[in-house]
Length: 260
Image (cartoon, rainbow, N blue to C red; front, side, top):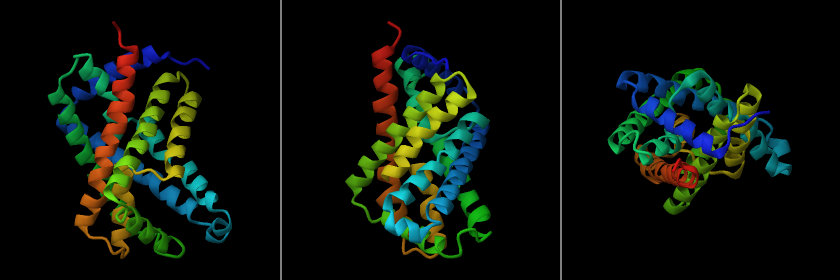
């Protein structure tokens, strides 16, 4: 299986940054909404499979984490293969472009803002129309699980969510990096799958995934307010995601392997 070198991955990321920054606002929002939907698709699959065996998981607590982690990578696989704009992945991919001065900071912030808004809209759309209204998680054991997930995520200390956000996007962006390194479909699938499975099994906080999990719990009666959703989880998770992807992947690898 042929793979690109680390220096080649940085060059590919720099090219991708220029392409992403050059997209129109309309196209960026459309592709971002699709990415939010895809992440929600991975989220519902992870939820249904991971929490579908409560008796077995009670005696084997690692099983629920493994099953949830194994299913969730569907979202990023769809984003990469079908082509969509994901905020967390763009945190890393745009950094070689701005550090290499092929795009400016204004273009980076514009892309991040549009993509974040589009991801949020897409995730909420799928959550309400394709999960809540269809009653996919209305029965036991998933109804209790979705409420518990929302309550737990919004009750963690702010600094814990922030640090878990760093861990989540560090791994997600490494998955993007591995996906860019592979030159075959099978290689890309493996590269995308393992790091994402890892972050979910560990229990890190991914802001775009939480745009699915927490609103679904709220729709099904979790004692979580919109204020708590945004300020107790989404804000620290987002800031952590930016740090994990932009600093520990995009910036770190650009400095290590930039074309001198």
